[in-house]
Length: 293
Image (tube, rainbow, N blue to C red; front, side):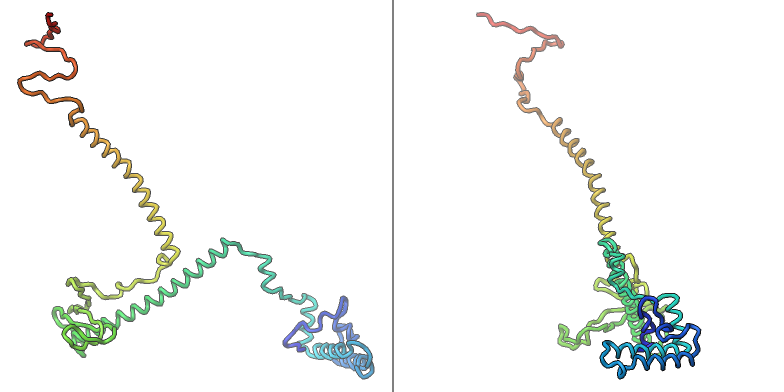
């Protein structure tokens, strides 16, 4: 046992027992008094004089440790400090877990925060790598367009750049160095990529996506759920209007169509739809004419 490794060694000697009382000196004793008391105590606790006493070797070793601590100024000062203020006790992680046991909500918040933070760090690393790659491609494009002296020329120059990929063979049987793209270098230093449709896409630092907590997985899920809820609400509001429009159109169609059971009058004959009163010339009604027998 060492005082350096364990500053609390030998403190717990029993209730009411201290290093000083164990040796037999007051707390104000000098080093000479401590040495004298130690020699006297060691003669009493020596294993050779107590061969049949159980635990005599441990007691004698403890006496030597106590004497070593009290003989040095630093050791004595530290012992007095721990004796007066108490010895710190390591309770272990189980004690703190029992005192504060996290629930499902706390664990979920911790995991969401941790994974979102890690994803944000990955986004920052990816953003920096993209900026370096863009800067490299732009430099190589300017070098191919302007030459080693990097002197800008008037107008724009179209070049073909190899950006990676495994070498292969094209349709004509020629060897290719890998994937290549068409690029245009302007006289003012702007570089753009030309796609298959001939459209120009500027290549600069704005082409890279910066890191953002809004693009982490949890925030993205919340945004998608809110967008779906908003679209569903707007669709529910527009459906009743469409139903009213359809009902109106159907009612107009029914009113314009001829009723079932009616016939179209034919020229030269009178339409018979049930019993209808005959009309005289001039708009007056004419009574029903009874047939004579």
